Structure formats: structure tokens, C-alpha cells
Amino acid sequence: MTTYKEFHVNQFLSLRLERERSGNKRTMIYVEGEPFIQCKHLLLDIPVAKMNTFEEIDSIDEAAEMGVKLMGRSRYETEISPEVEFWGHCSNLQVWYEHGYDTRILHSNLAFALLGKLAEVGDPLAKKMFKSELIARYERGTDRTREFIERSGAFKYLSLEEMLNLLLNTEDLVALTELAEEVWTESEPNDIVQALITQETVRLENRKIVELDFSGFDLELEEFPKSVLKLKNLKMLALTGNYFKVIPENISDLGLLKELWLDNNEISHLPDSICETMVLEKMEVNGNKINILPENIGNLTSLKVLGLARNEITELPESFYNLKSLETLSLADNRLESLPKSFCNLTSLNWLDISNNNLTKLPKCFINLPSLEYLDVSKNPFTENTNLIEEIKKRKLN
Image (cartoon, rainbow, N blue to C red; front, side, top):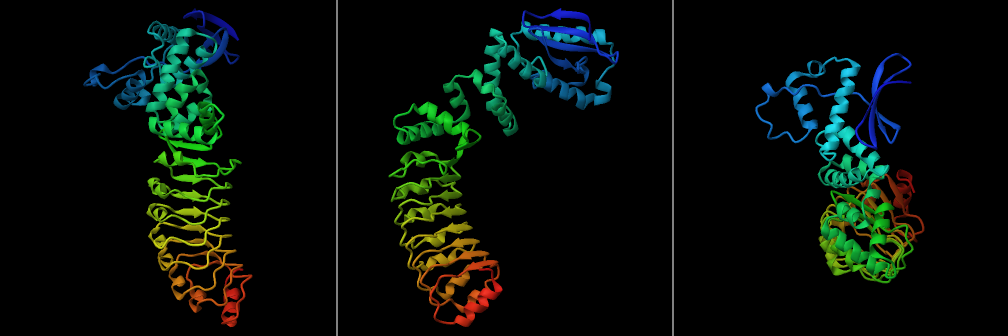
């Protein structure tokens, strides 16, 4: 590689005009003497005469986009010599530096990456500007932009407090901090919050907590953590494998909840208020001590999956058969003694496990459940309509 010309913007940043093996010349940006990126595009002419106003143009990105729209990409890109292009890039980077690394002056694809590299090698002005730009881009950016920033490791330039305030809105940050204090009483709350986010125990959308998954934790909670109920944007909550016996009545405060996983606790009953979570689609409470269901459980008209296995249920309330959206139902390992004909109102069921109960018979309509693809009726002491049971077994998987 042969260097024809070199231009120093400052002690960290320089440009070189180099000849490649192919004979072509290129402009390369160097940071602390190490090659960083090749300059490929140079904005030469903004079609001022065709623009009505500059009031809505806030950056080179927007000016370039408008230029392409007005003139077309082929007319907008002008052929110039590598030497002229080199000095053009030098001029742009010099102006960028003299204006405090204002990211509006360079195209965003270059400005953000270059700022990060300069910050990494210790440029104090770049560190300050990069942090400011990082925060602005995360706050105003799309989901893809936020995901890129999170994966890039750029948060290392922020303090823990700055990072948490950026990732979360104030209400959810306060609630998550309270949860950390409630569950991990001997740890620093901010460290716990950071760990929960980093480990993806908490999932965010638009700076709001939408998922909280403690299914992989051995928390041994004896009470349902009340601070969870302050996370008003939750769509999924998993608190499996604990020891709490009661679900708070104000569980209905989680009005956006779509999935609730409370398997393997000591819950004796579901509160009536849980039936007010009208968008709930999946509820798994297997392996508890539930012996009675709410009379108004049929209000959960969006419910598609319901896991009630390994409980102590002896009968189902009449409204249960209004769950017309229910597709998957497990009632295995309970104490059911009978099922009424109205059970066959559950016409969306395609997966049903009622094994290991005390059932002596099934309603005749079972054989005609229109959507049913899987049925397990094993380990029941059937004594009546045994021919029907055998016919059902032949038609369904068990």
C-alpha cells in the first residue's frame, strides 16, 4: 500500500490517500495511526435551487436524502478525481472536528462509528459527544437502532445510572428497583436491575418492561412480590417454583398481561380478580394446591392455553364452559369425578389431558368435539359407557 497524501485532523484522527494493489486510489481514515474505514461517498452538491426551505433539514443525512429525491441518485453522484475526493473528505472531517464532532455534519453511518472509535482510544471530546449522541439515538431511534446499540457494547461509556435511565422509563425503573430490594434484600438494587436486564430476565419494549421471567431462578419466595404489580405494561410474568400461597387480589392491575406462569407454588385458589385480566391468553398454574376455581373464570374469553394439572380440583364452575377460545387444557392429576355435557361447548379445544382423575364416565358429545386432535383419558376408573370410551380412544390420540 503506497501513501500519496496524508492529512492530520488532530492527534487522534488522520486521512491518507493510498494506492491499492489494483492501482486504484482510495481515501482511508486512520485513528491513532491504525486504519479504520475507507471513505466511499462524498456529498458534493446540495440542489439549493430546487429546495423550498432548509427549516426541516437537520443533518447531512436529511440533505443527502432530499438531494437524491430531487435529482435522482445517478445525477446526484458526480465523478471526481481521487485527489479532489481526498481533499473533500479532509475538509469534511476538519469541519466536523472544529464543530465539536457534531454528528449532523457527517453521515450517521460514519459519524457514530467514528465517534465510538475515537472515544475508545481516549479522545476526551469524542467521549463526551459519543455519550450524548448515544443517549439521543437510543431515545429517538427505532427498535432496530436500539437493538444495534445494545449489542454493540456502547453502554460501557455510560454510568450505570445513565444506562438504567436510558433503558427504562421512570415508573418501570422505580418498580424494578423496588422489586430488587424486595427479593434480593442484601444486594445493591442497581446491580440487580442491571443483571436482570443483561440476562434478559427482563424484556423491554420502548423503555417499558413487558416480560419478567424468573422461571430459571431459585428464589424460594414465600410471598408474591407486590412490587411486580406496579409494572403496568407487563405482558408476560413467570414466577414458577416458589412457596407463596396467595395471588394478590390486585393482580388485575396488570391489565395488559397475556401470559401468566405460576407453576409449582403452594397456591390454594385463584382470586376472582384474575378473571378481570381480559387479554390473558395463557395461564399455567400446574403443580399447586388449587381446589376451587373462580365462579367467573368464564370471563377470560381470550384464554387459549390453561394448565391446571397436579392440583386438587374436584369440579369446574359452570362458567368454565364459556371459554370458547380455549385450545389447550390440562386437568391431569386432579380429583374430578364428572364432566357435564356443557364441557363440549369448548369447541376450540385441540389438546386435552384429563388423565389420572376420578372420572367414571364421559359425556357422549366428547366423540364429536370438532377441533380435538389429542386426548388423554388414561388412569381414570371408567365404569359407565365404556364402549364410548373405547371409541373415543380409537379416534383420538391418547
